[in-house]
Amino acid sequence: MSKLLILLIFSTFFFASCATKKPPEQPLPTGLTRTGEIFYGRASWYGGKFHNRKTANGEKFDKKDLTTAHRTLPFGTLLEVTNLANEKSVVVRVNDRGPFIKKRILDLSHRAAELLDFIKQGWTEVKAEIVQ
Image 1 (cartoon, rainbow, N blue to C red):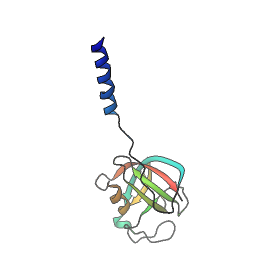
Image 2 (image 1 turned 90 degrees about the vertical axis):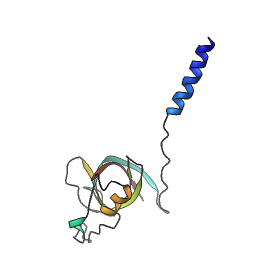
Image 3 (image 1 turned 180 degrees about the vertical axis):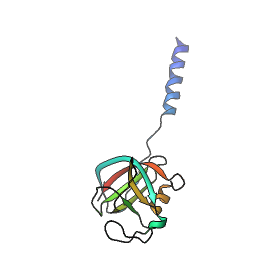
C-alpha cells in the first residue's frame, strides 16, 4: 500500500511539472483596450516593391509602418496581432485590402512582420484582436 501511495504522489508531482502555463497577455500601449473581438488565421507580410505605392485607402504604403491589409475591416481599425509560434505581439492599423491568397487573413507590413519575428518563414499563424 505504501508503494502505491508513493507512486501516486510521485505521479502527481511529475504530471503537474509537465503542465504548461499560458504566457501572460502582453500589455497594450497606453490608452488602448481590448474589445474581445478575436479571430485566428494565417498572416503573411509584404513590403519591397509595394513601398511608396498607394494603398487601398489612398495613403502611401511605408513598409516601416505598423500597418496591415485585411479584406473587410474598416480602414483605421487597430488590431493587436500575436504570433502564435512565439507569443510576440504588435498593434497595427488597417490601411489596405488583401491578402489575396487563400487561407490568409492578414498581410502585414515588413516592420510588423519583423517585430513578430516571421520574416524568414514568410507567414505564420496569428491571433488578431480588435483594439480601440
